Image 1: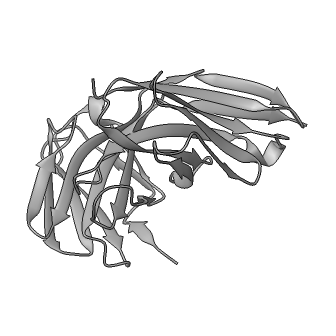
Image 2: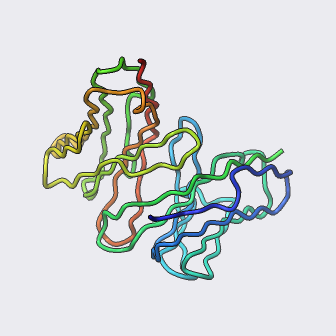
Image 3: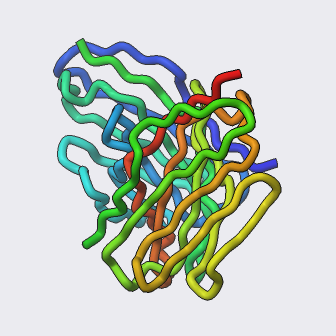
Length: 114
Length: 113
């Protein structure tokens, strides 16, 4: 069974704090993704990684950075958290190929920035 | 051109009824169209997917209908059950190996008993 785990289900941080969200997958997937989910806006891609140390900006990368030092782990970093980054954050992973591989999602981290 | 437009935003159906969710796209390079199902407190999970070489794909009570010329695809849930109550997302992607999906904004389905 594919498993994508995220370090926290709920997180409360103060404005200006540096925040780390961790994601681990156990299926040896090449691709890993970070999404943000907000009501009425669906899932929006923040960053994508197709290999260790490789990353690509998604649709809304501003205010975020990522790190992928090992194949199974993909971290999302909020350098200086702001209230507009309060959201549900979802990590996903998939195999790489010619397109059409299922993305497996973690349970999400609900981040509140006060 | 990268958008996938999904409707309706919310849908209420009686048990046993048919639920229909529609999506439209502009980018003709899209060639993979999955639907994801998300229950409260969980991450989305793949429900069913289709490629444009077929016009319909059925898995149990769930059917995707695909109209390439109209650039539209839809999810039909037959004999809807209260356990189908969830948020449904359509998505699309292109060949090329990046596996990036463009998601619709989601439809919250409520099936009343």
